[in-house]
Image 1 (cartoon, helix red, strand yellow):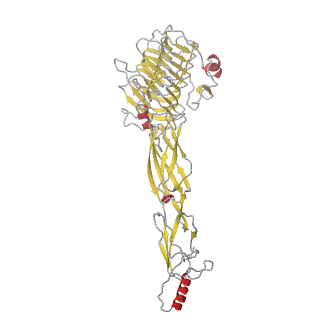
Image 2 (cartoon, rainbow, N blue to C red; image 1 turned 45 degrees about the vertical axis):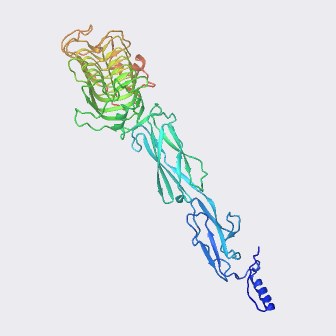
Image 3 (tube, helix red, strand yellow; image 1 turned 180 degrees about the vertical axis):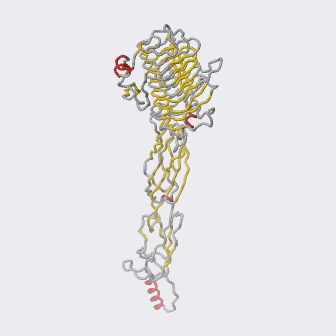
Length: 585
């Protein structure tokens, strides 16, 4: 479209005036657009409309003068958050022609061109770290809370104010902190586990979405951040215990964690107590609040357990466990001592219908005798008082108490089976190499430690059996001794009910004066092969051969026992490396 411009000039001569007007009007016509020449209008100003930019074009206008018909250079482009500058355009809505250094300036004296923008297409990558949550501290991760990072990177990330959103997950809460750096945006997500919710799959997924500022586009899907939750509420999801968190485990397991399940991940040594009269451990579980979960030792060892609480009952690594789901297993407890008032055991003080199995114990269990009350009652190398099951345990060390003292269990009303006691047991009443006092079942056990009973009911396998069952047991004690008072001494001191298939190869059955020994008078310092009550005698030629144990005793050498070709005695599977001493007649 051409625009007509008028030039006015006063003339005195008509003909001359007409000529001048014609010449001026002709000069005012725009040049032929197909054959541009130097701009006839003189100075032309181009204004650059940046259309809402955060930073305007620099400069925002450029003026050209003849003979120039194009720009030497365009201004520095404007910037706008969330958008990419595309070009200068002759139309405000971007539907016109591109304007650049090659565009001929042949329009109006005042020319306006407009910035054309496109929303920023983000090239965004989200990287994150995983996290693990558990109710107790575990070195790298903490109790019920942890932190993970979400890093956002990509094109123009430094110019964008992102935000992240996480879908809610039952049992987990979180808060987000931001750490914005040049060309990087990092979000720190603090996640907390409520400590109560169960996670049957052992994991939760936090789904992260980016909330982008206006003008930005992020078409990526929600990113999943795996959070492992070890809740300990099932035996298949045990809470790990190691050297780092053993102290916190002790505190948590006897308070909020009485019903949880745990697994020992490494062998560890407890810190030495300040003196023999102090403790480095508090028994887990009491009569009022027993432990009902499980502890899997994983075949690892705990060294140096020291408990000195002579005025308290239910003392051991675990004080009181209760219920069929309460299981302590696969543990080696080495060195140290447990000293309590009554119901004292290396692993468990009192077992109420729980299970203790596959344990090796070489701590000393003691209870000091005091007149009156229940001082020193129920002391065992593994369990002090048992109404559940104790099986597949090997015991060394020393056991000492007043009444109901046994190398494996002090007082038993439950089941004791498949155990080997090399512990040395001593006490006043009801002292036995395997069990002190029994009214439950004891089977498939043998004893090789010494037994000493001061007053009454002393036996190589058992001190006294009150109506319980004793079957398939063997007494191979180094010595069974009593002194003073009324003597009931033998491989079983006394039994009030029939026993089945038990054997004795006891060495050195001793007592100080010639007294009644359940029908068999024994002189002072005498020795005997059977030396006991209702137990058939055997000699080393028999018990040092595996056929006696597999045939006569019927013991299980496929799953429970192995044969030691060094000691010529059975050893429990899983503890074959234990020191099993041969019997020397």
